[in-house]
Amino acid sequence: ADAAEDRGVRAYLHVNAEEALAVAAEVDAIRAAGGAEAEALHPLAGVPVAIKDNIVTVGQPTTAASRMLDGWMSPYDATVIDRIRAARLPILGKTNMDEFAMGGSTEYSAFGVTRNPWDLDRVPGGSGGGSAAAVAAFLAPFALGSDTGGSIREPAAFTGTVGVKPTYGAVSRFGVIAMASSLDQVGPAARTVADAAALQQVIAGHDERDSTSLPEEPADLGAAAARGNLSGLRIGVIADLREDGYHPGVKAAFDADVAALREAGAEIVEVSCPHFHAALGAYYLIMPSEVSSNLARFDGVRYGNRVVPAGGGTIEQVMGATRAAGFGPEVKRRIILGTYALSAGYYDAYYGSAQKVRTLVQQDFAAAFEQVDVLLSPTAPGTAFALGEQTKDPVTMYLNDYATIPANLAGVPGISVPGGLVDGLPYGLQFTAPAREDARLYEVGAAVE
Ligand code: GLN
Image 1 (cartoon, helix red, strand yellow):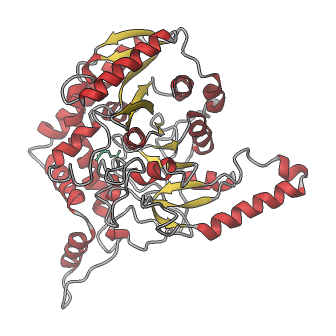
Image 2 (cartoon, rainbow, N blue to C red):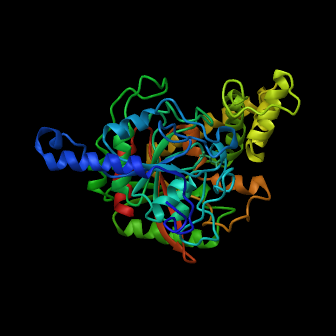
Image 3 (tube, helix red, strand yellow):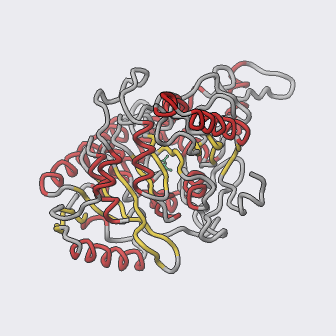
């Protein structure tokens, strides 16, 4: 899409028009010919999809929005791409993101910012701002994202769309450029809950190439979305996720939405998850620790655009120059943080303590799900903020993930559905469910959207 078609949003890093049109034409031809092949077509065949640029895709660049991988062409497809191709969904292009999925606004892309279609002076959220903005601006019917600490759900909240982080292991991570492997999960961004369910159904299921892939086949998510039921449902409102730091407008809109859910037949129960307040701190130790290890491969020798210092240099100098030039400041910050947290003498104090908090967060979820079917909170503490507003201080940006991170630490699924408008901007409602109960989220989400 040229700038005019993109309406100033700049959701895409690469548009794949020719190949997408060719796949669509193939599907049309099969449908027109009729017969067994036409009948065997997947119901979504011909419906195009946009892909976050950290998912490797043959035939177009995969950069993770980093100079380190500028122009890189993957020799193989991610498993989710295999499944999308098998169902004949044309791949529209690769969407912008924060570099290596680190960020909450898409401003840390090495290739320029994506803007929020609701207000072009505001961010679309991140790190998957390109996928969410493409969907919100009708530049794609749905898209894939990745969620390590909220990168599908927060952009959904900021753009008035639907975003789902599936259960850890429900969707293959093979071919997804790793950020923090114990937290990363691929999922759908869409305009409706039914669309998100349909896309997750295409990509989900066991993959022997991912050792953390769950063995079982997914439930019928489309049927769950079609049921869209709230009556008799016990919804736990997480008291701990409504307190300090929340935009007063979001708090008020949330309380009104909870009242409406009660009216609609749900039973509302106040629950406490007393360790959630510590989840953010634990995440910002565990995630950078894994980042520092996962990004070690980008050294200009094994992976990444090699930079040779003027006049040549030793292999170490080449690696140093490659990483100095290839990574942006936020990526470097996290590599340094993680390397420090894992270093001898600090490991127990930082990484070890964070893992203990992770267990406590998992126990909070387990205790809560003994009382209720799903948990509810706002997706993010605020609405889309102005470009440049939160890049001065990294911790301000990290606070956006307050409500989304617990689900990643525990591996449970989460959905963000539009909750309404606050001062003219969308805000999101987040539901979480026990692991493997993704279908329950689609059933609830469809009744709420
Ligand atoms: N905003 C979070 C971070 O910067 C989430 C990242 C993600 O989910 N990929 O780490």
